[in-house]
Image (cartoon, rainbow, N blue to C red; front, side):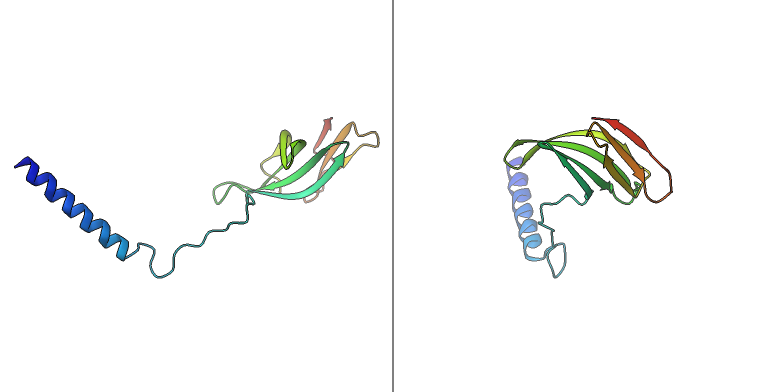
Length: 125
């Protein structure tokens, strides 16, 4: 009796999976995916380069439940198009900022462009 129930269950599951294959759950059009290979959570705003490294300012977007923010990273080339990233500064409540290097490239200044604050951070490189 147990073998008959197992075979019956197998037949029902195969018929159900054929039914789902014939009538997709997403309706008429299959879902479309963005294949641009870019992370929409990190939008580059500004880039400063010196020696073999670059410093990038990103606008971060974590989705509907998180605020926009900014992130400053120093990226050093590793091999080809691969980089080692080091986070220098982040602010999760800031939507606009600018960066500038000191004349001797030892200090990085991050300035808020929306709230008219003089300097948010001075980072020693």
